[in-house]
Amino acid sequence: MRYLMIPVLFFSISMVLAMEDNLARNGYATASENLKNASKSIDGDIRTHWSSRQRERQWIMVDLGEIRNVGCVIIYWQTCFAEHFSIQVSKDRKTFREVAKTDNGAGGIDAFGFSTVETRFIRIRLEKPGTKWQSYGIYEIEIYEQ
Ligand SMILES: [Ca+2]
Image (tube, rainbow, N blue to C red; front, side):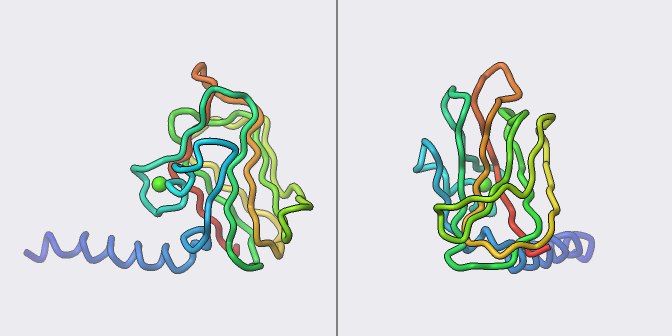
């Protein structure tokens, strides 16, 4: 019994800590398309994902609901990752500023740390797919203060 309890307990503690720290868990997700699935990118479940259709330029955005300090974004890619993409922030959803960018994404997990900014909206601009399917899929977006 003890053998079984230890990993279960450890998993539970990890989940609680992650939920408290990850600002995206209290956010609202929207996207350039397939809106009904956008929330699956911030539902805390690594088995569910948002995916786009086959179009080169897309975006997905998380509204934190209020201005928060943000200094780290982690993206968990589904098979269809982006090779070129950037992360932008905005307080008002009108003026966006780029805080991270890559032209050599390789999928898996991408973690970006940057100087902490005050922001409400975090938008991931997807510029070029990295796979032959020419679409994008994201299991989860996590957003942290640092
Ligand atoms: Ca998910």
